[in-house]
Length: 417
Image (tube, rainbow, N blue to C red; front, side, top):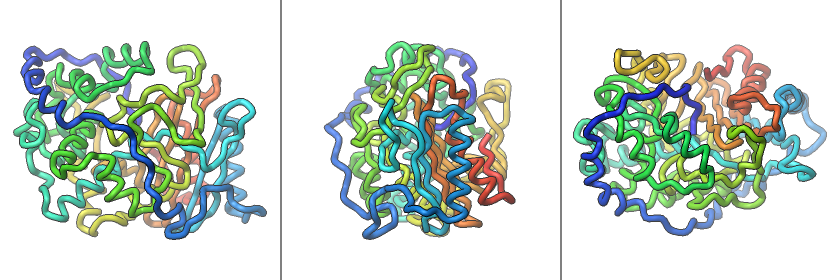
């Protein structure tokens, strides 16, 4: 889940029942099975790479500086843990873990945590690969695979992947938030999640504006399963995780986190409590609810940032698929929803472009993380953080990464919001 603007209560749409008649089509493609085991692939350093462990001591000057920044940020932000890995051109600068997973249990770099919207960059990559292979076109409309979606004959694969469909975001819907807060262990089906955006009118006509919506990637995942005849977790394993050697990145059909697990805590419900095993089924489609470790996150940052799995043409689309210039507030879409998409800051095709950095920044249920890559310097920064009762609101992994970037790339600030 990428951080989104504060919710504005949307206007209800009469006639939302028309989508309900076609739920059977959705049910057919969202049956769940037990989670598959992670594939045995290359480690974080490529073929034959070692396990995710702390950088050997003594540390070099740059590594010491980065680690000192992380230590100070942990104190200043009152964090429970900070995990980080920094590489330049794929070579390790520093890998470490500070603080605790639980009381008396030190954090370790090989601990797994929830990665949320990092999967969106992987899904966007898989989509572009299918376009390269001639299986689909980005501007194909989706009624063939998603007949239950309102305006499916006007919504394209590109619009789902770039958040330009006009569908509301269920994550900012007050009714959904109330239910999620009251029942954090609830398992959500795609039908239940999509009922929220389908109950509202579109913010705008598909393709004419920009607004963030988790519904887009939920639907895109279902469409990719239909297109390929392959479950989305298996598709990502085949096309992204295995080729990149992301052996500690996997989907989870249940709230389980592979061991060793980095535990999370939050005050989201008013009381500081453990949130490690709150059910993440609401974050995206079944099959794309991923966990990872800090070494895989840094590897993902570099691979997504360089377009390693894409042709040069597809990579250009990945980072600029036509969103620049969109995000214009209108009478039906407020400025808190239709956010400006500029050359300096815009959503690509599953990736955020922020001052030439390529970013994904999940934050939910006590977990915060960021993968960021600066192409001009070959610099990859991966950070994961967890909270104490006194940690300020917001994605604190972003805060730590921004400080590290200021040290290593002072001429190109990492500014996400």
